[in-house]
Amino acid sequence: MTTKTPDLNAESTNKNLEAVELIKDASNFLRGTITEELLNEVTGSITADDTQLTKFHGIYQQDDRDLRKERSKQKLEPLYSFMIRARVPGGICTPEQWLAIDDMADTYANGSIRITTRQAFQFHGVIKKKLKSTVAAINQHLMDTIAACGDVNRNVMCTANPELSNIHHQVYLKAQAISDHLTPQTSAYHEIWLDGKKVVTEPTNDHEPIYGKTYLPRKFKTAVVIPPDNDVDVLAHDLGFVAIIEDQQLSGFNVTVGGGMGSTHGDPKTFPLLAHTLGFCTPDQVLEVAENIVKIQRDFGDRTNRKHARFKYTVDDHGIDWVREQLAERMGVPLKPAHEVKFTRNGDRYGWRKNQDGSWNFTLFIANGRIIDNDDKDPLTVKSALRDIATIHKGDFRLTANQNLIIAQVAADQKPAIDKLLHAHNLIGSVSKTRQLSMACVAFPTCTLAMAEAERYLPDLLTQIEYLQQKHGISERGIMIRMTGCPNGCARPFIAEIGFVGKALGRYNMYLGGALNGNRLNQLYDENINEARILKHLDTLFADYAESAKKDEAFGDFVIRQGHVSAVKHGIEVNIKSAI
Ligand code: SRM
Ligand code: SF4
Image (cartoon, rainbow, N blue to C red; front, side, top):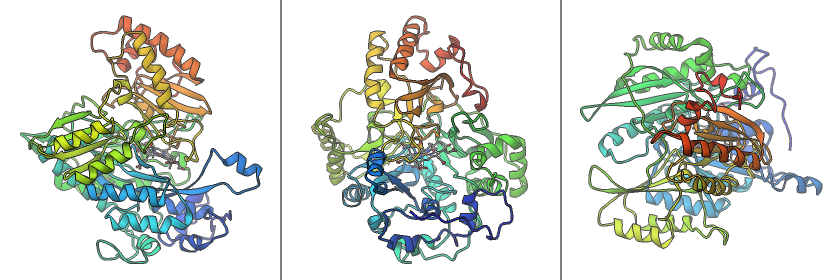
């Protein structure tokens, strides 16, 4: 693999800038040498600079980590392939799009579809020579991959629950408008992947009115939520819009800023944070607010240290009042005071539920978002089931922020047919409450940053945890457990009631004390522990919970009241180990 040194003669003169800043600056609006690299047949990889740039196009270079050592022994280059992320603003797609996604997984990728924690699709295992045709196929079906990754605003999330159909539609349109408004304008995407032919609208000139040529200092994430549900974990976002409903009408949004999950083991200057509430804006002000918040981060985010470059640090360093002043100055008017809002729950509601308009939804639990027909070990045929359902379904599909899927807007007369398919594929069954609330990130074998297993391990660990819950007579109490293979926090583990964060193969940090509505960070309970120690801790904690919890007291609240961990007031305390 060839590696280019960043061009130090690029326009910027700040010698302390991160290398990625120089790569962006010199990239000619995200072109780099991607086109040339796609034609290079000598290697299955692309250059290090281009791997930074392809992220903006929704593409990550990876290699099979299960095979890395063996291939190195055989003096072969790593088995490179690419992950492609397709944006689905608000998580809604049609049955036709579903069928296309299903086909693409088989034709271009490793046969599986992965629903992410941000309501998007991922394809894994796409080889270099299929990259262009895969991106083109995604675009043909009116989805895209631009800004699915990279230092820009990502896929905008929106509450998935379709029950409040009228309000949901208005709020969803706002999420989509924010997504469109903040999408990069460079024509590089269409030029590289679609041969300059734009599929939906006219091509634009290369000019980035919101971002400028070096885009943002770091990734930026936005979510729109309809309380009392907090299914998108809005407070974990750089920017959030919390819908305010008065007299059944959408009157506006509370604006939240400065949330984020990522941290680095052993680096106390990095920590997860929950967002602060900035104020209230009317529906008409949403795009102006979003644009100006992004511009504040563009101008003040730290471009000299990527570990300190997220908006959460900009907000934390300057303070929330400073953000208010900045925004008021840029908008020419301050935001109004925020409304009182109460979130009652995060996570999803499973099974059949009726909408206001008489149609139905079925929320299907998908273990860690992986849609695949399994082998003999676990004979579930989720992928085939969903293909069969998509063939007859006339409503839409909604990806949830918890890696699940809603078969939405099912007409009453279609419900029996869909229900029959769900039964035929064994998808209406007993999944424990704790499993329903669980999430794990991808981790091995594809994630380049994984330190421990997550998606491949959590299901087995949960079986043992379910056994412990049964032993202590607390099976009916769903406990939210989230696992990630490293502290980047892709399954938002730092707000779970129990969070497991990978430290090394088979070893995890264990966190306790998140809330079941996503409004409290948890705290480190024990460090670098293996499965035996995890289960020993849980055995003791569950015994205490069974004996001393108040009626309906959630596990996360209990462990704080009981002094197992403390209630974290600032993210800096998350990694301070509680005294056990
Ligand atoms: Fe993530 C990087 C997977 C949601 C924080 N994340 C990655 C990469 C791309 C690894 C890499 O950079 O090479 C992972 C690809 C693994 C693979 O093989 O697919 C990856 N992140 C995921 C997904 C697929 C996890 C999942 O199991 O669903 C989620 C894709 C979301 C999407 O559709 O866009 C995903 N990542 C998140 C979230 C959750 C969220 O946004 O609500 C977070 C925490 C929130 C936040 O951003 O603060 C998250 N991912 C990160 C970070 C840490 C960022 C930081 O501030 O430090 C990284 C590493 C980085 O950016 O340097 C990362
Ligand atoms: Fe990879 Fe870490 Fe994200 Fe898991 S949390 S997908 S291991 S970057």
